[in-house]
Image 1 (cartoon, rainbow, N blue to C red):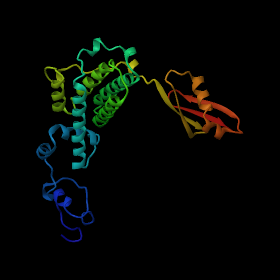
Image 2: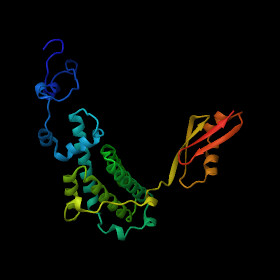
Image 3: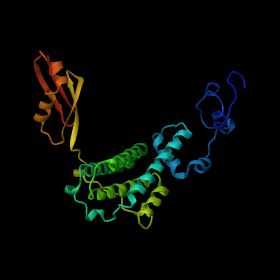
Length: 272
């Protein structure tokens, strides 16, 4: 009570007009009555959602602000994973390894395989570095890519790419949300727990991008971006950069002194 007002619970705050409530982040303390115990959070959101929130919100060594909004976001993410697994379960083939042929896949199937192998590579590295927040972020991106795949034009062979993606996703989800991962794993017909299953491996050739987006600078200032084949030689990338209308507009009437190419990243055109 006083100039600072009175302390109320989040539930009470939700029932008051927004202009009558002042939100302030502070350290949890029993004396302040603002402690949220793990038991309470698990009861309300579930153990897996709490784990997802804690791992995703920030690196472990940093202080974080507990928000129910963040925990609810973790719940929604897990719901999306379950929905995705449900959509793909009927076409899932546990023997995809011996059947999948890259050349039989549509563009959507090849794109999905690339995303799968890129995600395996990144998540494996993130977990080894205990960078849990970025590993969860990569899983979220993969879920988005898999949903995009379901909306794309595809052929029957792509079911094998989807089987690989779903299986890999579930196994990578296991360290983050083990109960959810095990439930989906069982639903796919597997026996045992995900932590006993072999961790997915990636193929560098499949993880490689087909095309690259290259930044193009003129005298150190970004003027355009170009898309080139991943295996394009230096000369072809430089020619594509110089052919850009935006680059031409900033070099018109000037002499090209030098073209500097940083492989896979940028081209800097020096002109005067």
